[in-house]
Amino acid sequence: MARGAQSRYVCQTCGASVLRWEGQCRTCGEWNTLVETVVRDEPKPRPSAVVPGSAAPVPLSHAGDPGSEDRRPVGIGEFDRVLGGGLVAGSVVLLGGEPGIGKSTLLLQVAAGVALSGATVLYATGEESTGQVRLRAARLGLTTGTVGDAIRVVAETGVGRIIDLARADRPGLLVVDSVQTVASEELGGPPGSVGQVREATLRLMELAKAEGIPVVLVGHVTKDGTLAGPKTLEHLVDVVLSIEGDRTGGLRLLRAAKNRYGSTEEVGVFEMQDKGLAEVADPARAFLAEHDAPAPGSVVAPVLEGSRPLLVEVQALVAPTGAPSPRRTASGVDPNRLALLVAVLGRRAGIGLGTHDVYANLAGGLTVTEPGLDLPLALALASSLRDRPIVPGTVAIGEVGLLGELRAVGGLDRRLREAARLGFTRAVAPRARGRDAARVPGIEVVEVGSLADAVRVSLLEVAAGPRRG
Ligand code: TYD
Ligand code: MG
Image 1 (tube, protein in one colour):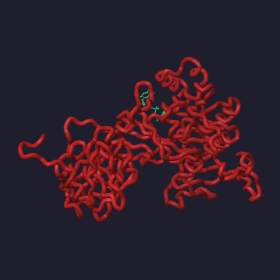
Image 2 (cartoon, rainbow, N blue to C red):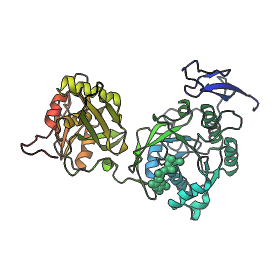
Image 3 (tube, helix red, strand yellow):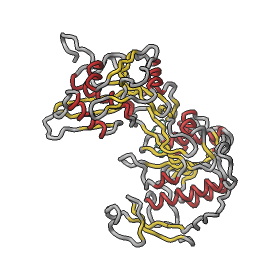
C-alpha cells in the first residue's frame, strides 16, 4: 500500500465508509457490500492556500471570457454541440449508456476527429482486445492513413500503467473504455467495485488536470439506468454525457446531465448505421413514426429538448383486464406521471381506466421528462380507450393539473413553428392567460382550459358504418 494512504471499507451500494469490515452496511442495510478502498490523506488546503493556475482574480465582467479555456472541437457537430463547442483541455468526461448502445463506436469516431485535427489519441480498452477495437475501426473506415496511425490502442486494465503511458505519450485525448474494467494496483477490491471505480477516476482526474489531457471515461449503466458506482463519480468528473435510445432501432440521443463548461440544454441526435453513428439531418422529425392511417392511441407532441424542438409520438394502449390491480407500464415516460394522469382522467374527464391495463411509450426509444407531455399522454390514453384516433394533422402539448386544469408550457411558439414546418396544421394547447394566444402561420391553435375539453376537441368523430379493423 502506498505511503500516505489508508484503507477503509466502502459500501458498494450507498458509498458509506467504515474502518472495519462488517457483513451488513449500517447505513443502508445491504449485506456483503463493504469493499476495501484506499483513502488518501490529502493535505487539506489552508484557507490562505493559493491554488496554482487560478490565482489571479479577474473582474467579473471578464471572468470566463471565451477562450479562457482551451477547447478543441472534435469535428462531429452533434457531439461538439452537446459538449458546448468541443473537448476542454484537462477535462474529464464520463460517457454513460447501456451495453451495446454505441459508446465505443462514438468514442472511436471522436478519436478519429481528434486525430484528423493533428493530435494523437490513446485508447485504453479493458473490455475488448486490441483486435476487436481494430475490427470496429475497420468497419468505420478508420484503420488507414493518418488516423490509423494517430490512434494508439492498448489493452490495459491497470490504471497506473494507463497513466504512465499517457504521461509518456502526451496524447491529445485519452479514452478509457471502460472505467468499470480498470483497477488500481493498490486496492484489494475487484474492478468495477465502488472503491476501484472512484480511485481510478480520481487518479485519471489528477492526470488530466496536471497534463492538460482531456480524458473520456466510458461508464456502464445498471438496469435501472443509473451509472454503476456511486453517485459521487458524477460529482467528481467535469462532464457527464449519456447515450440513450432503443437498441433495436437506429436512433441515439446524446445528452449532457452535467457540464462544467457549457449548458446541459443541448441534445445531439445520431443514427446508428452500417458505418457508425451518423448525425441526423432533421432531428425534429426523426422520432416520428410513420402510419398509413391514423391510429387510436397515438398523439404527436412538440417537446423541447433544451433549446431544440423535437416532435415525438406518444403511444398508449389500454386493454380491459379482470386482474385486481391492473398494470401500468411506462417506457420513456414517467410512471408516476402516467399513474397520476390515469387518476385525473377518471375523476375529472369521465374516462375511467380502473379496470384496464395501461401501456404507454414514446416511439424511437426516447425518454422525455418535461411536464408538457401530460396532455398528449392523457389524450393518447383517451384515444385508445374510445378507439378513436386523434384528428389528423394535430399535435398536443400542455401540463395537466390535479383538478384536470391545463397549464401552459414555455416556448410554445417555437414548438408550433417546428410542428407547422413538418406539416401539422392544428395544435391543442392550454388557454393562454394574460397573454396573447400563440399565432404561428400554417397552424390553427385550439385553446382549451381543461382536460375534458381537450379530449372533446381532439378525438376524431367516428362516422357511422363499418369500423376499421
Ligand atoms: P458499441 O459501440 O460496441 O456499444 P457499447 O460500447 O456501448 O457497448 O456498439 C454496439 C452496437 O452497434 C452493435 O450491436 C453493433 C452496432 N454497430 C452498428 O450498427 N454499426 C457500426 O458501424 C458499428 C461499429 C456498430
Ligand atoms: Mg463498448
